[in-house]
Structures are given as C-alpha cells and as structure tokens.
Amino acid sequence: MSEQSRRGRKPAKPYRRPKKDPVRILAFDALRAVDERDAYANLVLPPLLRKAREKGDFDARDAALATELVYGTLRRQGTYDAVIAACVDRPLREVDPPVLDVLGLGAHQLLGTRIPSHAAVSATVELARVVLGDGRAKFVNAVLRKVAQDDLDGWIAKVAPPYDEDPEDHLAVVHSHPRWVVSALWDSLGGGRAGIEELLAADNERPRVTLVARPGRATTEELLREEAAEPGRWSPYAVRLAEGGEPGAVEAVREGRAGVQDEGSQLVALALANAPLEGPDARWLDGCAGPGGKAALLGALAAERGAALLASEKQPHRAGLVAKALAGNPGPYQVIAADGTRPPWRPGSFDRVLVDVPCTGLGALRRRPEARWRRRPEDLDNFAPLQRALLRTALDSVRVGGVVGYATCSPHLAETRAVVADVLKQYPDTELIDARPLLPGVPALGEAPDIQLWPHLHGTDAMYLALIRKTAG
Picture 1: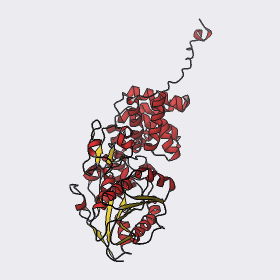
Picture 2: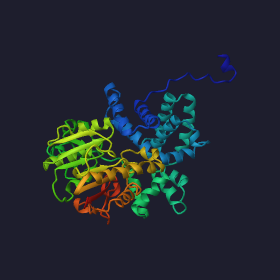
Picture 3: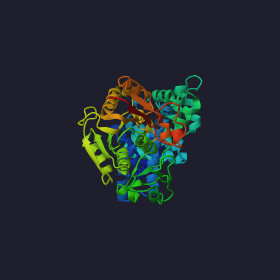
Picture 4: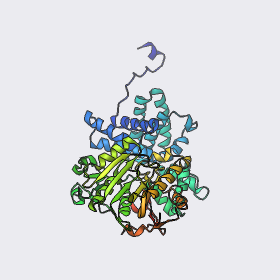
C-alpha cells in the first residue's frame, strides 16, 4: 500500500487530454471571427466548412450541426445572455468574450436544440478545455449546470420582465433583439402586439436560400429541377432551394446565369422596371450597384427591351463583384467605380434610376443575425446624410418623365419615409408613384404609395421602395 493510501488520501487522477470536437471548435472559431473582426457569419462560415470538408473532418450532418450552432447562438444571443447573467456572480462585461462565446454555444445546445442536457454540458466543457484551458472550463461547467436546471420557457419566465410592466424590454429578451430595434420596428409596423411578435419571431427563423433565374440566361424551370426546389411566392424569377440547399451545387449559379437573391430584392428591381414611363426607355442606372444582385436582374430586364444599364459602385472591390454578376448579360451594360454623390454622368441622362442606399440593414436580420448586436441608434445619424445625398443625385440623374426608385434593406422610418419626405421638399417637380399595382398578387403592401415588405408577411427581407417620377426640370 502506498504512503498516500495509508494516510487516507485518494491518489491524484491522471491528466486526461481534452477531446477535440471539430464541429464545436469550428463553431467557436466562427463566433470569434464575428466578434473580433466584425465579420458576418454568412461570409465566415462557408470557407470554414469547405476547409473542414476538404480535410475529411466533416460530413453533411456535421456541417448542418455547425451551421445551427453558429446561427442559433447569434440569433438568440440576447436571450442567452440574460440567462447566463442570472447564472454568474459578476456582470457579463467582466466575462472574457471567448468564455461568453463558449457559454453561448452551451446555452443554445441546452435551450435551443434537442441535444440531451448531459451531452450538451459535457461537449461544451470539453470544448472549453481545448480553447480556454482547464481553469476556465471549470467555470463553464458550473454555469452550464445552472442553465441546465430549466428549459427555455422556464428561464424566460424568470429573466424577462412582464409584458404589462415593460413591453419593449419583455419582447427584447423573449425574441432576442436590442430594445431600440424592437422600438423602431414597432413604430414602423404602426403598433399592435401580434404584428411585432410575429416579425421578431420571423427574424429568428433561418430563411431558405432563394435563387433568381436571370432572364435570357436561365429559367425557373431549369432551377426547379434541383431536388426539393419550389417556386418563389411572388417573383416570377424566384426559386427556393430545399432547406440546407447549397447554391454552389447548382450549375446555373456556378455559370452566373442565376444567382442568390432574396425575393424582396427581386421585387424591388421588378417594380422599378415595370413603372410607367413617359417617353423613351433606353438608359437605366443602378447608382449603388454593389454587390451586383439587383444590377444583374436589372441588366437582364433592360436587355429584353433593348435598353442599356450603367451600374455604378463607389468601392472598386465591390464594383468588381458587380462586373462578375453582370458578366454574360445578354444586352449592353457598363460597370464603373464612381461616387454616387458626385457622379461622372450628366444630369438628366437616364430613364430609370435605382438607388438601393447603404443603411443599417435591419431588414435582413434573418440572414445577418449579428447585425442586430452590432448596430447602434447613432448609426442612423451616420447614414442619413449619405441616403439623402444619393436620392438627390438620383433625382438629378433622371430625365423629365423618368422614374427613380429609392430602396433600403431597412424598415426604420428614419431611413425610409423620412428620407423621401425630406428630399422631395427640395424637388417640387416630382410625384410619388403608387408602387403597389406593380407587384400584382403581393398582399399587405399598405395604404401609402410606397412599399414595405416584411419577413412575417411576405417571407422576404424587409425591403422598402418608393418610386418617384420627375414631372419637370
């Protein structure tokens, strides 16, 4: 018998190396990139998955789990942070960000998936040992064991304030949105609890990949041959892939004859293209063309009518993406790198003009869930001068009788109607066109002449569009 055993002490446990779980390590790496580099998950995750597949570490199920862990953790971050805060003895700002990422991954497995609790805790603690070290892994283990004591509904009942006492903060915790975003979206909807709850819930759903068949180059019939693909709801050029569908596996996408494009974005381009004109219809302008989705559809639609498209984008690297999207367009087009607020073309040069202006992106939170945590109310003030300047340039660029489309991927009133109203005060010789008849069959477009699409009503990003006709010079 050893001396240690004679004294009644247990022999020390031999050190065990942590088990490396490639799925959870990849998910952690993606979350760190989002946090440290302000990257977007939809740009970070695909190359990580591709590299893992090439190394032989991943199969399709692994890729699906990694994707769910990353997007689920980001979408529900606000809710999970509230739960984690109730389980730690310090403010969350004092917890190192990498530790919070591991805790978020663990909370999502416990509260947002069907992974058994013991497996979720065990796997996350092993991840912590690999990426954080044994000391902080013990902290992760202690916190997650507390989280595992209740389910999501139980935790929400504990950490969310009652709706009757603070409706905005209640919705912010329950649906994992910053309070200021809840307030802004509620204002844009015009009030009512049911609508805002449906919208916030829709923001937390993973959208299907939507393709666009570029006219003259591909057809929806061709795209519908993909397994479990189905037609879009509103655009005649839209096809939705099956859940988890990989657009890079579609031949027409690889060849540039089709592309990935939300149906709301397609509808904006279609409405501008179908707006009634007075006079010729030969020259079209996309004044904020990057990264090229709308420009490619507009270019194809222009080609069908014998019109030419000029696609302008300020950032040279984004202008390169536009050129790639338009390559092979059946009609005449040109891509230039130019500042849309100081354009190189003459006033009154175009018959149709689209400006899809830079904005907060609050309409695309389904696809970029991290944007809700990255944006701040002061961002609205930063975008406002540019949005107004681009709309003024667009109105200067269109001829009398021509049409301008002002679009944003944000439903925030400060980025939509407020911009249009302010600018049109300076342009009395213009009129708003009722855009609703230009999207036949699309319901719930509101009473105003402009259009606001919604994820919960239309299954699209929350795109906004105002169409403006120039009536005099």
